[in-house]
Image 1 (cartoon, rainbow, N blue to C red):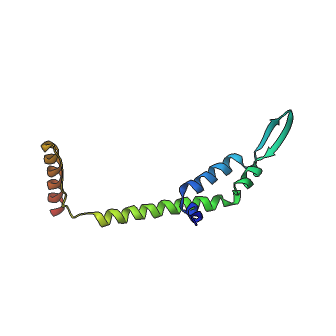
Image 2 (image 1 turned 90 degrees about the horizontal axis):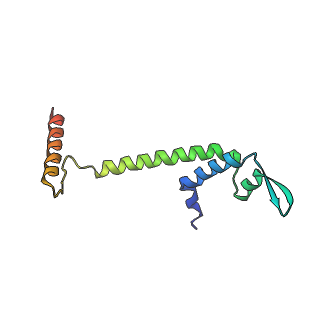
Image 3 (image 1 turned 120 degrees about the horizontal axis):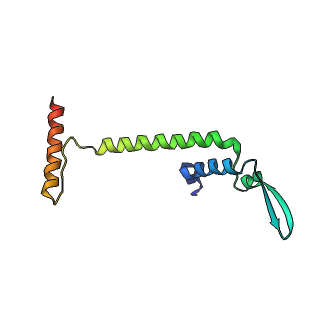
Length: 112
């Protein structure tokens, strides 16, 4: 029941793009016990159920995942953003004063 998770993974699409790029159209020559065996790269693609025709889908899926995560990050930052009520827990008083100085400057700039 976890098979659907591969479709929301950047590794699934990224690996398919890289694998197809490297193996498609390649002929690999093996020397197995004195016999020369030529294996086409398409055999490797079929083994992993990859296809050259899926490259546009993979690129669009990676871009969609990127945009989705970007929107999710923006919404989370917007949701957890506090309106200049920053509580600094700094043991070093110099650091605390530096933060207060920055936020006081930002409040003054916002008031203008």
